[in-house]
Image 1 (cartoon, rainbow, N blue to C red):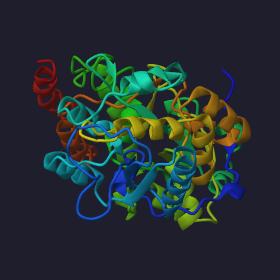
Image 2: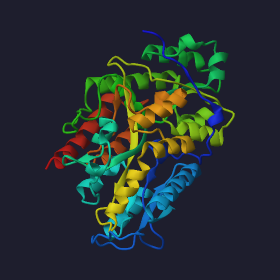
Image 3: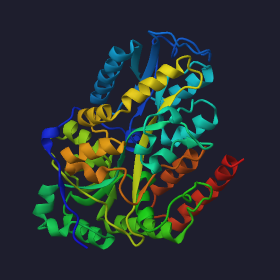
Length: 429
């Protein structure tokens, strides 16, 4: 097997990006619709308005000021072509605000839906299923479409996406006497180079403690939280245990640390400050480094393979349309406009969102091959877990992973299995 091709970051593509929060690092930012004043939209009723010059509301929880600007520019283009008016607002806590809006019967017209909340909203009757109205739906990856399907219907379509990649600091790499031939292809390779990079205040590999990062190693060992159809819990497996055992081995040996151990808000901060020679993150890392640590360069590589082969995790959000919107046709029209290849590529250039339409992604990576390891369409990429109510067991799983250095992986996985089984059972009723 040939060593993986390095992907060098082109600093010329610097983006203005706000500091990435822990919530954003768990996935991509969430876009939603919101109106002016205390509520969203003009009415909570379902009587449809089909006249011209409609007023739509959009609420966004952006990862950056660049994202806010990009969305507003895209919406301005839609207003010119449609004659409709769209108001864009930002949310500090999108899940909380959407929950309140749904409960109050006055939701925004269009909004981002986090993959971990999708089933809760869809099965609660809050989302209008519009997938059959989207042009060329087959151009989206099946794994991402499956994350936003409910009762056999394509409820919504992905806005953008990202997988994880291994980011390497080239200066620290060279200083440790490593060359391109040393880029890790396997877990053993990763351990070897991380040990060599660990020196003084620099740790070879720093990541977050979340399953949204460590789960990649469960996948590489041949495991995952559920089966492919998300109808059976598979957390308590030998494969998953093997994946977490490898992480624990690195933590106890000191060549792998969690961001909190190096006094960093997140792994991107640790990498930017030079405390980490390598990290594992998604495309949001580029914006964080460009904004907060413009002098920190990096190269991207595919994640190493484990005993089960290739394994990676995909992160995505979808454009949600409210079931109770009075402007559903116009809302779907807006989503259609924002989902075109032209708009997806424009978003990618402006704030780093990886396009998810195949034609858009191909064109983007042709211009920026250095970012291809972040493609959510590569082999072995696991889509988000979207079982209704599973967000709580997974949150508990993350809490227990924080103590992985001293805890037994088998126990942690057993707890997830125990907590997740009744959720799976309830979801199948």
